[in-house]
Amino acid sequence: MTSHQDFWASSGFTLLERSADGGLVATDAWLSRFLDREELLPPDEAGPAERHLHARLQAKPRLRVEATELAAVEDADARENWTHFLRFRDRVLAHPTLEACYASLFREAEVGIAPPFVDALAQVIVRGILDGTDDPWLCRAAELLFRKQRVSTEGGVVLAADAATVEVFSETGGFGNMGRLLRSQDVAMEPPKMDVLSRENAPIYFMRDELFSFLLDLTPGREGAAALAQVLEKWIGHFLGVATTIEPVGRVQDARWRWHVGLDVDSTAILNALYQGETVAPEDHERLAALFILQFRNPEDVLPQIRGSAVYIGLGFRPDRTLKLKPQNLLGNLPLARAG
Image (cartoon, rainbow, N blue to C red; front, side):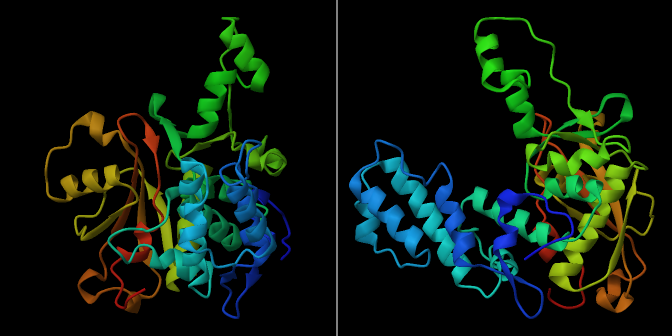
């Protein structure tokens, strides 16, 4: 598949096919790309059984792997990695589209596949949803659906930074292996600086999209918050087939508040407490990084008892200031008049 503006090449989106209804269909080429990941690529010291398994799956990514063949892999860590991959692959192949596979994960008590594969599905699905966009704010906001963030709230400004990028910068000062060497020798370096996505630097997002190095301003009234609202609208429309309007707000404003959805454990707890009239400590309230109000464009899509009432969507961060948005919470927790 091709797109007007390519981004997140590592997702393998261009290796997929589309179903008749627009869903993403796995191909051998897309499955094969996972075999090139560090976790599955046999290292120099890998044993013959591990190398043989890797070679067979490279040739035939859908090949059935017997338990005895998996058990023969010499290294315990490698064996575990292969177990996770094969569980993921088999789950994907059991469904007609990646969307159907993703949605199925959250209908059971346990997700059944490792978190990195859940994030890989979310990334490539939202990549497909945004296919053809030229809007860097939409793309940066969509990163929250599959990458952990670290949040700062100084001066009332809510900024989200990619957590993995922050960690790398803290280790290297932004200078890669040379930075690690300098830090190991206690050489003083300027603290790393990540750019906030702005009108001035937005055009270069697509030149460094795989670096995940832009901060996103989630303060109500800023482009980042509005962009995340649009991404959530598109996600809901793609999976549930309902049209919504989502807008960032600074606080709960509706006395008829009847329903809310937290996009993570922390915002769920905070919104539950507010809904029940409990006192929320200021330091906990601050951890509600973003709040949105959702309206269904067609009232018939909503449960009768909820029509005319606001639906609030919250996004919060943990006490360590990390944030992990769970887009799957929107698939089963909205007050739909029919099952999604």
